[in-house]
Length: 418
Image (cartoon, rainbow, N blue to C red):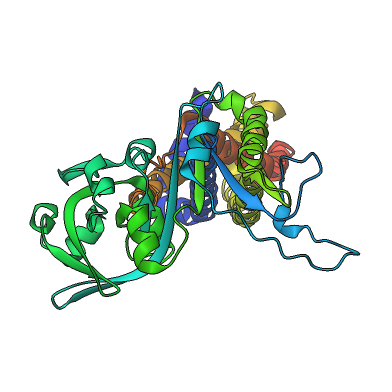
């Protein structure tokens, strides 16, 4: 306790010098904490997205068969080496095939879509690069979009081939004053007129905005196929709630689709996103390591500053050290005193750095939430404790030399020091 009093009294006696010494520690700790917090948050978000995506088993047609006849990981990288290029005409996928395949045990639903890029206009307002998605009757319920104004697509819209459209919330605000104001208005998509029947909100919209997509309007897949000359079904997704079934059920669905379609060349295969997610996490890990190394250099520089100031402090307090030794203080007492003072100095810097990092992560979290729905950024307790332990360790390590020098001073020579 007495050593703590000595440490705080020495720091308070030289406030400006102590603060300037702590700056390197503050920067280093705050950098480490912010990077660890962001890295941890991004990693959790990637895992969350991966778990969510595993509920969607996406099936596509490939002209090249995979090794086991049903599943591929990087089919786009495969070539027909040693053979002449063979053009395989993909089958015109029927929803009845998908519906029949969805009867397999473990499948909870399905949806099919097509899409095209369009320019949306309303009077003098225009939104370019909007990704118009055409979905079947099960699409909206499967993707869990939330209707916030108007209504959803109905079975009658599909029967009547109605030119109706749903706008995402951001898109509705761009073309109209509010989601309610968009209802029953007629907008143009590349010259084709659509009546707005509803406005929805979805986490996917914010992610799309990050990649420069103007919006995600939704209509029927038949309408997109008829007006924009695309296949009525270009994307097939089966839904499962039990993600543990995904690895085995995926290839089984692909085989069933191939069997029902009766294709002789090529086959239906499953999109494997595991490698992509692993690569993203590897990139995050690499970036975190690089920036943490830079922050570590800052801590090292801060540590050398602490060592320097502690050496100055030992010189300034030579007579005090001699007096304490003359009164019976042992070498160990002096060593511990200066080690504690060095540790308190860096620990205070660590606390200030931690508080600064908490503020920065809150700001980063607010910015990221505008781009990535559902992401949670914050300084966790393990990260906070780790940062304080690091700052205290820096003080202990870089305080050894000054403390050792102080403990070795001869009391008689120290008392004579001017």
